[in-house]
Image 1 (cartoon, helix red, strand yellow):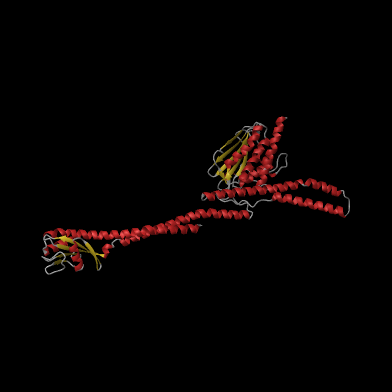
Image 2: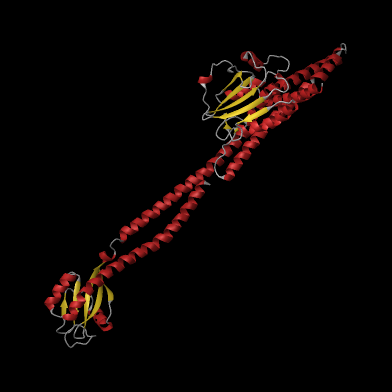
Amino acid sequence: MRWALVKVSLAVTAMVVVAFAVPLGLVVREMARDRAFSNAEREAAAVAPALSITTDREQLERVVASAGSDAGMAVHIPAPGAGSGAGRTGGATDIGRQRASDEDIAAVRTMGRASTTEVGGGSTLLQAVALSSGQIAVVEVYVPESEVTNGVGTAWAVLAAVGAALIVGSVAVADRLGVRMVQPARRLVEGAHELGEGKLGARVPVEGPDELRRAAVAFNSMADQVVQLLANERELAADLSHRLRTPLTVLRLNAASLGHGPAAEQTRAAVEQLEREVDTIIRTARDAKPQTAAAGPGAGCDAAEVVRERMGFWSALAEDEGRKWRVAGADRPVRIPVARTDLAASLDALLGNVFRHTAEGTAFAVDLHNGEDAVIVLVSDAGTGIADPEAAMARGRGSGTDGSTGLGLDIVRRMAESTGGDVRIGSSVLGGTEVRIWIQLDGRTAPARRGHRGTVRRRGQSRTQAQAQAQAQAQAQASAPAARAGRAR
């Protein structure tokens, strides 16, 4: 496509240059010729007044010398008594060098008007002038070829240079336009290949013409949906396999009561093999992680849009429990290098903690701050607070306590550290807990914020993005009926 655009631009520009430069060059040549003969006419006109007064040779020679050049001008005066159409006869006066033929001079004297004729090395202008005696004299002005073409070569060279510059410029512009169109298409192809190879983190930048931008958006959306579908399939496989444990236990107990014998041993061996297969399926589904790549240009999401979406989900439960809530900073787009599912899972985990670990009616807020090099997400509540943030972060490793899945803060930590940021737990302005998520925009670490109390630095067990979101959604769905049941009691 790139070379096709260059070839088309080259052909079109070349045709335009030829269509305009060739006629313009011919016009320049004609203008130079007209200028040369206009100068010759002025020289001939300078001699005409003297011829109308006198035909004395000496006086006319002085006039010719002052008007032009002896080598470039000649005056032909007919002999007294000769007719107007007569050629050269005895007694005729010729001043200067004659270049035109006698026939041309006689023809001009007969017609009585100016004429031009070709001679060796150039052209001559023959101008008829009436004498006081009524006869016709002819003034001959020589116009050399160099004067006729004076400046024509330079003008043609300038036209050629301008035409070449236009062609080169059009080719360069076409090449840049081709690159602008080809590069996004090439990135789209590379992203499709990476996604086909199983690199589910492959995304393409949204750039280029509108059509390619829409294609990039559609590709990124498709890739997100593929990741989500695969994660849902893994979760479904793990859940279904886990549900098989109960009937397998029954089978194992029944097989144990079969006594001894080949059939009983085969049944028990089959049950044990089935249990091992189910365990393998569960471990494979839980540990499966998509091949993700580092977030490149075009990857990420609009944090403000995700915050508004998740707050719209949790606000329904907040109204049921009589909680006041507030969102700030989400009225304008805030682009971050984090996948939409990761940010949504992190927000669901933190908001789920607010609903599980604070009393009904406790207010909470989500604030979004957009800086030059980082974006800060604050989730705060008006609860009793956390006395020991480090102990609270132990849940991120999975403490096994009631109501704790061991995933929530670990999900948030991994999401923040993937950008070079961090997570801190402190006291909020509402009087309760504040979880601050620092999302770095340029991928660098934040050393000034490292080492503070409450900063999450531990590496937890790796889990997929879809597992995190599924856990957060399940927690939210489990909290809503429990809260409504508590109010009913």
